[in-house]
Image (cartoon, rainbow, N blue to C red; front, side, top):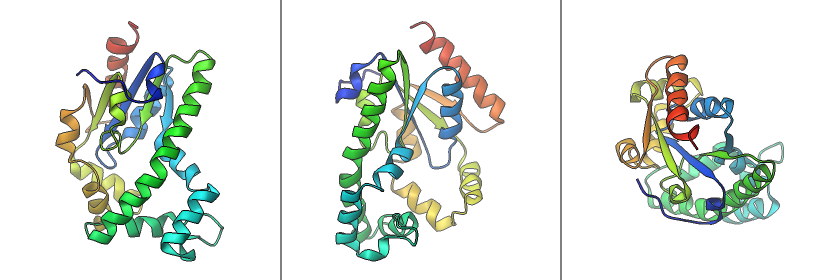
Length: 213
């Protein structure tokens, strides 16, 4: 799949996009890629950092009121999630507002991290972003990996995180269907077995598409 140039993330040698369904095992795949030498750009972690920025907090308080601030002074991510996940017009509007507010800041943090790491001779980067395709960040990638897992296993993993069936369904509905994601990928990792089996597939990908470069 040919991917166009999009944004300054394209300035460096190799960028691999990582996507998949909710609780598919993307973080584990990213861990194995990091063990092989890739630098992981974690959009979720960057998003948590962005939620602590004073301008972001001010914007969310203005929209939703002071209750979005938790007892520790940080953003109450659970309350925010309750507002933005759902199919009501209000939830859809709130989700778009949040994405418009956060995504440019997340991207700026990831670009800054990649610039820093590239200056220290890092050559391979993995962009681990739940909304990689929905946000069109895949256009900046040389390749996209899709982590595939049966819905029953994904639900079990989500339940282990304390998510209810409704929370799982709402987060799933807020992303592209997994089949559509799979169709946009250049490589699929099947995560229906053991961690060792996933690791073996990551090694195969690395040997075929990264090591030769």
